[in-house]
Length: 483
Image (cartoon, rainbow, N blue to C red; front, side, top):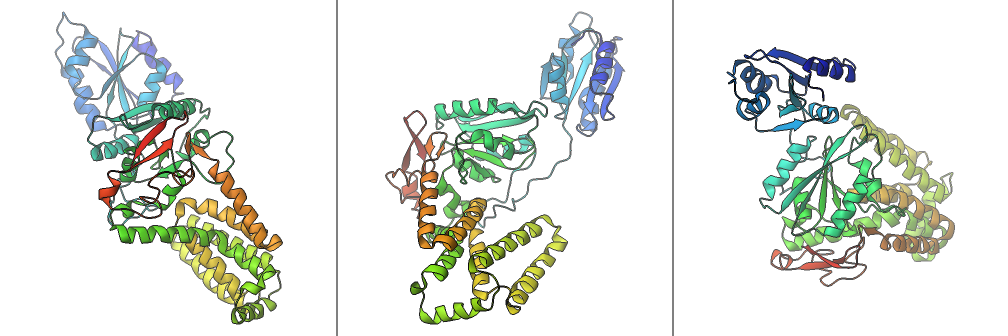
């Protein structure tokens, strides 16, 4: 930066293209030295700026035998969050984050003081991860608030927060959080390498980074990157040796490595008694299979394998399908497609109009469609129940939806053989995935000791507290993930 304050002011105004929210408050100190306070209107707390910066600067008595810049830095500005900047890029980054900068005539460096006062959404319960016995707090958009919620739950000096920036244009702050004594150094280095390779201009949400954190050769429908909006869930994962990534401006935190079995685990599992928690977890696995296979099996058995159906059920299905105008596979595809359209409409519409979508779906498409003979009642039942089952495991909803359409087509064209072949292809592809060197289906494939402790069932805390699952990291060395 330039030593002449007037030249600095003119250059900064020009660099900001005389933006209406870029404010410059010029003032004169008691010894006659010119100074200026730079800020972005709406990003700072004006009362805090007045009390901790402008008033002390104007009223302070400055001795003759001291360095003015050091005296202001060490003896006048009382705010605890204070940083020195020497480049224009640093200046822009800080004032865009709610800091105020103080420039003094005759000095190149500026002081930036944390006086953030921008509005943000308060801490509230995340709608996508509801629990009954856990915390009601969810991540918010400001990254510093999210860091505080994690730090408040893990009071340990081994908890590390490491800041980075992504986005050539947006300069979005992100923060890696991990337990130093539990994390794998190889995984941490690989994660930092992939984040530094992000070549996006803007990063406005955590989802922007998922493609860069996934293995380059991965084309699987299953995601090897975990996402959560709950600070207690993130804390539980990082105590197991995982790494969390907080992105400024979004309440969704990324977790790596991420395993398939974690899609069936929730915070409530560890708050309830083991028997009920195990029952709920088994229920989730059954719901996953029903959501995935039910429409495809219905089409395959009805078209190719009628001998598997009891005679009364066969006669009922035959009577219902005989009056419909479409082949069974086409009918199931149409009903499944209409359901996805209604789901998306209900999700995007304002809440005041979402009830109208439910009424249209239940009365017009459901009851009226069956009465008019356009769709059969068995088809509607199987597709609707499959859709309900998919909501039991919301983390896998997108994967289940795509695969479900594939199984419908495979079952309609090739019967059970088509479903079995597509299942083998999907299973082999999923088992070949790695999340930062950790097998995605671990500890199921490869099988690890203690597979039943916290996977298909949930053991008592006395056993979980002593159990460790061995997983392979990308170098082949074993890493202990505490369970």
